[in-house]
Amino acid sequence: MICNLRGWLLLTLLTVLSLHSVHASAHAKVDVITFYNGDRVTGEIKGLFAGYLQVKTDAMGTINIEWQELSLLESRFNYEVRLSNGQRYFGSLSGGSRPGTLQVSGSGDPEIFDWLQVVELRPVEGTWRERIDADISLGYSYTQATSSTNSEINANLSYEAKESQTALGARYTISDTDTETARSSRFDLSRQTWSPRREDLFRAVFGNFESNDQLGLEARIVAGAGVGRYVIDTHGMRLSALIGAQVLTEDTVDTEARSSQSSSQSAELAINAGYSMWRFSTPELFLDVSASLFPSITDSGRVRAQSDISLKWELVEDLFWEVSAWGTYDNDAQSDQQYDYGITTGLGWSY
Image 1 (cartoon, rainbow, N blue to C red):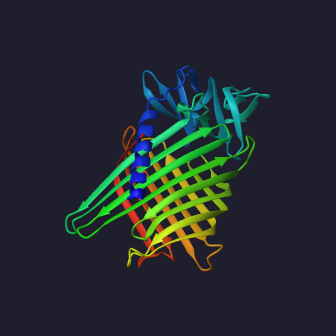
Image 2: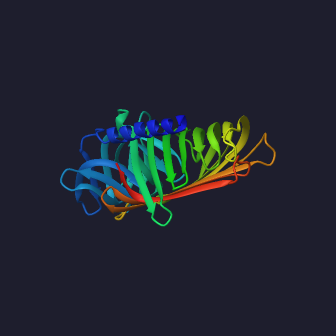
Image 3: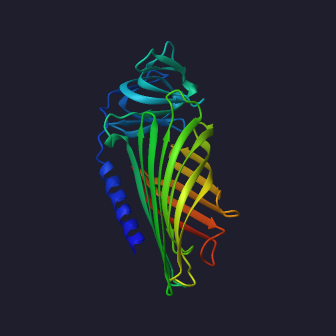
């Protein structure tokens, strides 16, 4: 009951923060974007992702412009500029010595890059509210033949600063049948940091809380750290890998005899691979796949694993059809079932 109450309270907090971030202000629409044919658009540069520059305008709303169609960007606001080799630069934007080049003016000497070297632009906003990205989705399914229902809430928050990214994710699931009700929850907190001139490496610290009735897991609290690398990092996809170590505390219950409870502490290796691909042309598409393996260091022979898949397909602007799936495995689970999984479909809204 306590774990379930904690889950609903944290998800409620995430929902409030997600809705609150909608009111985050943005900078004035005074950036100038020039095409090779001489046409100009004035607006707010939201960022460069997947080969498309997103610009918010008063007259046309938010538009996506193919990166190779542009010859000049001008903005007095600060942006993070990420190159294909992983290096990052910060500063205002202006044209270089010739069309198809970008000049970034920060605290040091201006840096000039060829257009195709740039794979991402991200505004480095001045206030904390402007640095928040949030989305939340709800899913529900009902099967008449078995009188079973499945409800799921997913929420994600991220906060990006000049040399770091902090992310909080949450999932809460209730599966209800005529004979039993099973709940599972997971909350993940991570922070990645890098140096301004770092290439593909990043440092990470992470932690999570998990409970799962099907696996006899009352609570699992994990804290760890590691180092990661972007193996592929382009306009349309990203492949990353991370290796580290973590410690965990587990409270388990025998599902055959509910009164039999135990608590343990252990250490594990943490090996993770993540793949993301996205498309910002209409209809937008986002795919995110993550798989983790946790061989135990202190408990010989024990192996845990988990995976998450999220697919979002845009129906109309900012409204998505979302399919999410997750799986978890533990060869030492305190139940007659070593694995659990869930699949949810529904509508999601992103800001």
